[in-house]
Amino acid sequence: MVLLNLGVPGAREFYPLNEPAIGTRVGGELPELFKPIEIKGVTFKNRIFLSPMGQFSSSDGHATDWHLVHIGGYATRGVGALCMEATAVVPEGRCSPEDSGLWTDSQIAPLKRVVDFCHSHGTKIGIQLYHTGRKASMYARWVKEKDSSFVAQENERGWPNNVFAPSAIPMSDRHAMPKAMTEQDMQHVEDAFAAATVRCRKAGFDFIEIHAAHGYLLHQFVSPLSNLRTDQYGGSLENRLRYPLRVLQRIRQEWQDKPLFIRISATDWAEGPEKSDDGTWLQWGLEQSNIWVTKMIELGVVDLLDCSSGGLWAKQLIPTFPATHGYQVHLAEAIKKAHPSLIVAAVGTITDPVLAESYLKNGKADVVFLARGLMRDPYWVMNAAKALGVEVKQANQYGDA
Image (cartoon, rainbow, N blue to C red):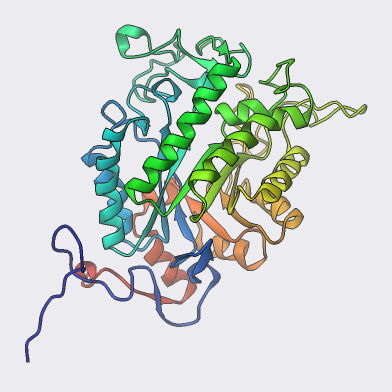
């Protein structure tokens, strides 16, 4: 008898074959967190998804070995889906000079290296595409001095005079003053989203998430706090939704057969109500979010709705600050209740597996996205399995841990 340590077929180098995939239930009662879920023909082995986290570690938009190690580590520890960080579709659409990009073909290969590694370990991987709008040309978070300007100047690799937004309204007096986008500017960004989507396919990603939350460009268009345009892209809710929906439709044209996730902020958390007594919209909130989601569903441009909040208003008032466990889950629950057939994800300070399980079991969401919880505890998946009394496949290489 010949005994071999079999490798993953087709991998670019030798990796021991793990069957079933790492993070798959192999014994015990099957909790909701570990139930596979199929989204537009793609099967995810469990419902624990890695939320995109900016690393400020790219070289002119190109992924580096940091990204391979950062993302690859989660692939070896059983996370159901990995979403790479917010990746700009144009250079001026980055938050910082070190942000990830996908505006040129040379950026495909470094990403494909990460994708191939994750696939070799049985994990689905996607990427979050975005344009930061008025929050562009900022320092990496650890570079800025306390209470100083956020703006990276030209001698600091920034582009403070090339920042764009729906309206010429800065995020705060510590951010760059944006230029109001012309129709030509908007077409340029739309074309860039489409081109980046094509590059995502070439890199081999399983899904794309569009970042329309946290005060970035598409969120800036939908919110009446940041969009004061007087043309067909501003004013009424229908007009404010027009450009984001146009961009999503263009992306779908290039991504018809794979899952398209959309991350939204369901509320701006600004002071006061979502609308006045006379029906005037004052800030972005759940009522408008549900209308937007309805439009997305009608147009077929969303397969999963990732429900976050805030990030647009500098003086936002989050009721549970500092954030408590699952502080945004009620927003996901409201979206899910209004759209029961839509796959909805909850995100935001989700760290306790028992509570995470309850969100899914009680129908508040279909999957959970974790960021810092997984970063602080790389073995969160295995620890969650233990807490829920289920046995899951561990990597062969870590079997004696």
